[in-house]
Length: 350
Image 1 (spheres, rainbow, N blue to C red):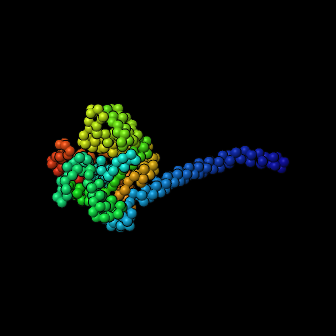
Image 2: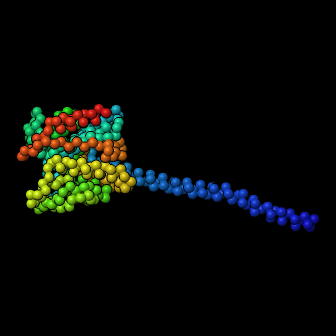
Image 3: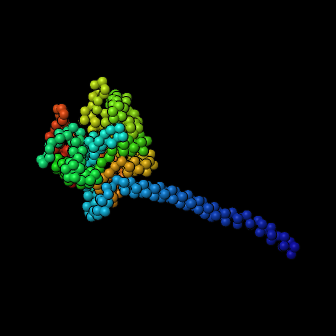
C-alpha cells in the first residue's frame, strides 16, 4: 500500500508534463489569431477613419464647388456622368491679388466617358480668333469677361446671376464650335492650380527653355532654368503661363503654352494615382474646393470624383489646337479643328 501510494503520484508526475504540452499548443494558436484580428481590426479602423475624413473633405469641397441653386437638380440615373459621357468647358482665370481679371488664360473643352474611363481634352490658344454665327468675333480668352459685363450692364443681372449667364454663353459658343453638347462649365483660378500642385508636393516637368520675366505691375516674377525638375505650385504656374522675356529673347507662343499645360496636367494625373498622391488626396480635395466652381449638381460632382479618381495620363488624350499667328489673333487650322471635333465626338460616342 505504501509503495502504491508513493507510486501513483510519481506516475501522475511523469504524465503531467505531457498533458501540459498538449494544452499549450491550441492556446498559443488562439492567442496568435486574436492578435492578428486585433491588428486587422485596427488597420480597418484606420482605413475607415481615413475614408471618413476624405468623404468629409469631399462633401465640404462639393458644397464649395457647386453653384448655389444647382445642388437640388436631380439627374436621372441613366443620364448621370457615371453612366453617360459628358462634355465640359474648362476655364482658368487670373484672379491674383496683384492683378488679373476675368480673361480666360486657359480654355479647354473635354469629354469624359465612363465606359472606357478615359477623356479627350482639346486646348484652345487664348488668342484664337473665334467667329461663330450669332456672336461678334473675338479672342477666345475675351468671351467670358465680355459676356459677364454684358449681363451686368445690359441685362441688369446681379453679380452671381451674371457669372452663371456668362458661363452659359461661353459654353454655347464652344458647343457650336466643336458641334457637341457641352453640359457643364468648370472655372478654376490660378491660385487653385498652384495650391493643387503644392498639395501633391510639387510636380516634375521638363522646362523647355530659360524663362525670365518680371512685371511689378501685377506681381509677376518668372525665373526658371531649363531642364527636368520638380516645381512648386507657383513655379508650375509660371511654367504654364510664360509668354515672353523682358529682353525679347526666348519668346513663347500660345501653342507652346498649351503643350506645357498638357504636360503638367498629365504629370499631376499620374501623381494623384501614385501611393504618395493617394496619401495627399485630402489636401488636394481641399485645394480644389477652395478654388473651383462648377455649374453641376452636387451629386454629379461626387459621381465625377468617384468615377474618374483612378484615371491615368495614358487614358487622357490631349489635342492642342494650332494655327497661324497674325497679330493680334491666332487663326486656327481648319484641318486641325476638324480633327479635334471628330476626336471629341468619337469620345462622346464610345
